[in-house]
Structures are given as structure tokens and as C-alpha cells.
Length: 436
Image 1: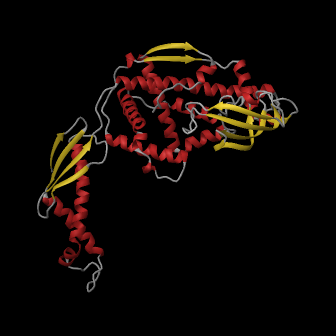
Image 2: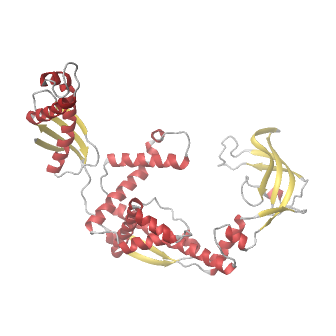
């Protein structure tokens, strides 16, 4: 087998491969002999069909099959011989493809980039620290109670946070416009659901009142036909209802799957969840900064085949997440190209970090992470057991731990500044690209 390689770009290789005719004929004859043992030809007993008849009937298909298999076999033999690492399937172009002659074909493909991760000591990280205080728990309880707010009708003027039931008709120059009218709409005053001035204009109204509101749609209103334009709304208030927050009692606690009978016990459960959320938020912020730093310090060429494959995966994920009667390939590739490139880049860099620093998943950390995830379930020991019985899920956890070890490796060399922040600031998502 003869092999020659041409570098057509930083990552693209054009490899010409020659396969001797003898090897081809050997493979063709092997297939014809296999066919002869099972072929059913009228006038002949199975296994007794003359080879001349077998060759006449089946040689063309046997040769086509042999050539296809030989191209696949010899391509991988050639890349091993040339110590190449293809990043995708090759595009094969036959040069000589005739019976009795050596097979010669050209395989064009991309290879994985060869590089060494560098610049770790130049990466700057702000590592936040925070703790869950009693005041944070108080705020969380208020949020949980507001989520369960009920409204009871009252005989008084409406105030902010009250819920009003209204009919309204919107007009422009005396004519009703599309989408500007509704009946029996429930609106919480101060919620910001309506355009500026609408909710304020209903403060002080009672059930049975009618109000006329002269308003202007915002310049950035989603309906461009209405953006920046004046409108008049005639509103009829049908009911005013005051908010009633649920009591912190056993019935309330059960809504969140918590079997507690005391406020103290429920607060303890809330604290555990907030602590878990805080740890994850702090870890994620550091990880995002590390990944951004690695990308900035390691500008490498990326195989287009890997980006294309990642775009396809993101398309499928988008369809699964948002549904709709659409096929993944109908989504424009450019919607996902930047995210796909970032993910591929990080995948390559992380893989090289693992190799370069000889990292392996720490079994103790794997166990710790599984137990932390299992703690959110009612029977955590069953969840832990399930992970260790499911190799695929266990490998996913190992991958997460390996990424954490990559982050730790970077932090040992990076310029790290520690900063104390509040719980609220710590759990607030940072505006950063998606990590690996």
C-alpha cells in the first residue's frame, strides 16, 4: 500500500492511497467463494454451482462491496501509519477504479489540532464567597408565600398589589384596534404587565367604576404598529381583591414536599436548599471565568466537521426543548454556530488539559457529587445506588468531576482574587457565555 499526504490547510489533509490489484482480487475472490457456498442457482445443487457461473452473476456486486470495504480498511491503516488523528469522516474521490489495476483514491479530511494548553498564569479570576443568612431565608420565605398568594374580594378602593378584574377597550382616533380589548381580565396592580400608566390609572378605583386612560405605547413596544403611538383605554372595574398570603403551617410546607410541622424545621429545609444553590452558583461563576480565560489564552484552529456535528446536536436539543412541528435540520445553522464553536473549543482544550496534566476522575469527589445530588430526593440512598448501577450516568458524573479538576488545576496557577458578596449577588447569574 502506497500513501502520500499533502497539508492543504492548517487542519485539512489530502491523502492519496494506492492499493495493489492483488489485494483487491483476493478480497473479491473471498466474497465470491462465500457466495458460492450459499447461492441458489436453478439447475445446480447448493454449493455445487461452478465458479464461472458465480463470477458471471455476482462478480460486479462482490467487487463493489470489496472496494468499499478496502477503502475503509486502508484509510484507517494509512492514518495509523501516518500517525494522523482524523476529526471526521473523509471525503473519498477515486482516481483509478478499474478491474485489473491498482486501486488509487484520494481521501480529504480534517485532523484534530495539536497544541499545548498555555497561559494559565495569565488568567484572572474573581472568586466570590457568600453565606446564607437568616435575612436571606426570610426573603425566600416571603417569595414562597407570594407564589401562593390568594385574592379575596374587598369593598374598597384598589391599591398596588391588589388584583382587579376588568373589561377594557382600547381605541385610536375613536376606532378599536386589534388586541386592544379584553373582558374579565385579572390584573395585579404594580405588576408591570400593562403599558406604563395603565395600572397606575386604576389605583383608587372601586368595583363598578369606569375610567378612561389616555396613554402612549412605548417606543420599543413589540407590536411595531402600536409602538410610540397614543391610545385611549376605557376600563370598567368589576372587582377589587386584596392579596392574602398563606400561613407558614404544615399544609403550606407539604406543597414543597417537606414533611415538617414547625416553622423552624421548614426554615432548616429551606436553608439546605439555599446552601446547595449557593455552592453551585459560586462554582459555576468560577468555572465560567476559567473557561473564558482558557479560550482567550489558547486560540486554536477548530475542525469544521466537529462544529457541524455540534450544531446538529444543538438543533436536536432546541427542538426537544421548545417542541413544535419542525425538523432539527430546518433550523438555520447560524443560530448555533458560535455556541457550537465555543463548545468544541472548550472540549478540545479540556481534553488536552486532562492529557497534559494526567488528570483522572477522583473517586471520592464522584461519590461526594452523587450524594449531593441525591440529597434533593426523598430516598437519597436509592438514588446513589442507581447511579452506581448505571454506567452511562456514572460516566456523566465522572466527566463533571473531571471538569472540576481542570478548573482546580487552572486556579492553582491563575491570578485569583477572593471577594465576599451577599447571597443575593452570589446566586445572581453572571452574563457569561455557556460553559462546556
